[in-house]
Image (cartoon, rainbow, N blue to C red; front, side, top):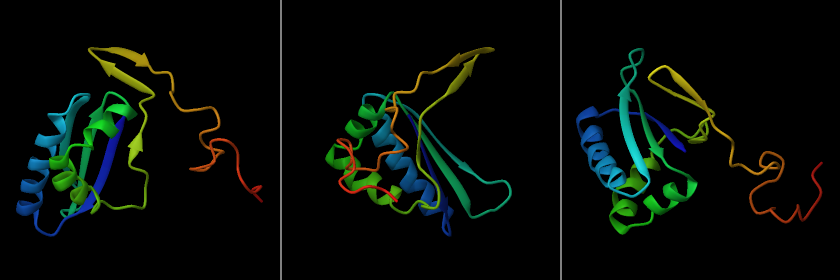
Length: 125
């Protein structure tokens, strides 16, 4: 799973220090592979943080320890929210080889809302 958080930043020095602490904590968790913070080359106040996890379960477990909840969750809560943050890899490539990944999402993932796993309580219109 890939976590993608975009930020609008007014104080880059403070922000990068906070992100450094957050990614240090996250990448120390089992199942968290890597994190990257990048700055936009088009808009000087726009930044993106990407964190790669082994799975959704690894992401949820990585967010559980108290130091992560204390430092990472407040940082992520400042991310811009006009786009989704979690993505499931479809293709990856390394050393010229492309690997296609099978989705682990349920077949009805985009038709059933959160909390409706057993079926909607009221019909959609």
